[in-house]
Amino acid sequence: MRIALWSIAVLLALAPVCSAQNGGLSRPGRIPLQTTSGTGFIGAPYSGKATTVKEKILTDGTRTTEIFVELLWRDAEGRTRRELIQHADSGAEFRSIIITDPVGGMYLKWNDNEETGRRVVGIWPVTPAQRVTAPPSPVNQGKPETRPDFQNEILTPQEINGVYAVGSRWTRTIRMEGEISNRVIEVTNELWISPDLRIIVRHLHNDPRTGKEDTEVTDVVRGDPDPALFQTPEGYEVVDHRAPNQR
Image 1 (cartoon, rainbow, N blue to C red):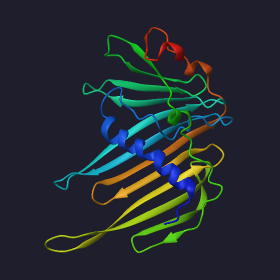
Image 2: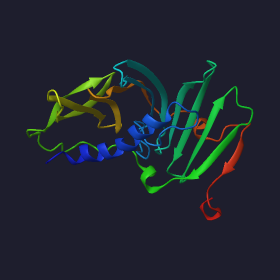
Image 3: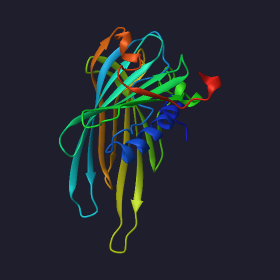
Image 4: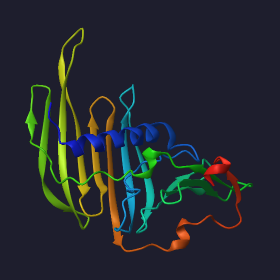
């Protein structure tokens, strides 16, 4: 199978995103480290908003819809700040915030929640994998490929919410064998990347067995964000989890 190298790299980057989202977005303080924000890519600062709509199909056939909103910033040095907006059972809004600083070799994480008495900022060392999470530049997209169970398409570039993007769609055909009848389903992934910002501006996943997921970046503003956004917030206790020689 020949898939464009940049597509493979992006798929690998998306794997921990999907895993973390599926298991952790519903609880405070647990948000994925890799995202559309493009940590580590320098010289292209921006801010924006990522909205994810997840439609799930439960075992009894019931469909549910969840919406997640994440605010994004990246400065010219490749530092990123992400704020995932969530709501507690009481209805109170809180934000889970992660700053990833590949220059300083650390990331910071804390919750902004009115119902939390103790305010703590955790600091951890950045691993090599976290230093650059921007998708690679899709210069050479390779060639489309079609097989009986797999199809890779290079899509016509387009503007998505004001951002020029190049896209790929890959479709996997699965034959479901059952006692009564067999059926064929198609699982599709569609990925749109901004070549100059090096961010994922849209990602669509559709699996008839589990549901749909659509992440889209809007409100993109180019330019350096306020430097204060990448600093430790005032009024918080700092807990440093780095080894002494890493500080």
